[in-house]
Image 1 (cartoon, rainbow, N blue to C red):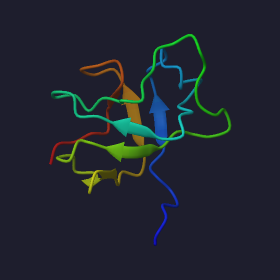
Image 2: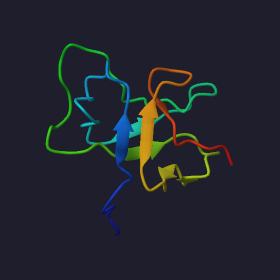
Image 3: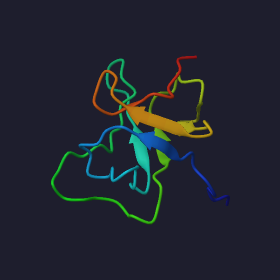
Image 4: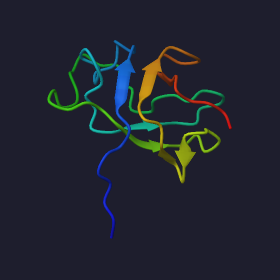
Length: 98
C-alpha cells in the first residue's frame, strides 16, 4: 500500500475570517468543494475559535472539481494553491477548468 508523502500546500490564504487562517492556513488538510461554479474551500470555518495546528502549513486533502487541470482522481496535483475571494470568500484561485 502506498501512502501520501506530500499534498500540495496552501501557499497563501486571503480568507482572514477563517478560523484556520492565522497568517496562513493551518488546517491539516482542506477540501476544495464543487459549489455551483465556485471551487470553494469547504474547510472554511468562520468562528471566534482558532482552529488548526500552528506548526503546520495547510495542504489540499481532496478536490471535488474533477474538471480542473490539476485534478487527478479527485486529488490536487498543483505545486501549491492560493485561496481567496472569488465567487465565495474562500475559493481556490489556482483552479483552472480543463
